[in-house]
Length: 76
Image (tube, rainbow, N blue to C red):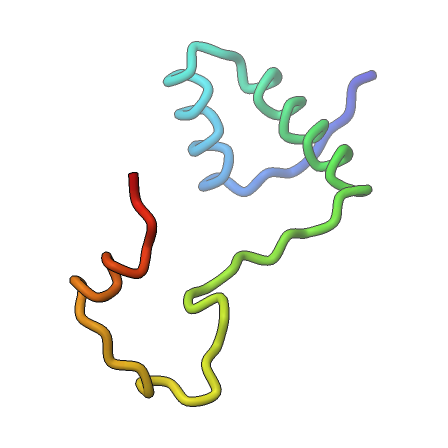
């Protein structure tokens, strides 16, 4: 099926550059993007974790040196 959509000039130029760099057609990349978008409908967004994962109630209350940490971790 054919359809017409208006794509901003800046976006279309980026799409053409991506297609040329990848050796693909604009149509191929656009279809792949549309298919990804439609497939993502059922997926839940995953929130990225940030450090520290476990928050301390008293940060900075334990003062360990690198050597002490190394002694606590059982490394092969």
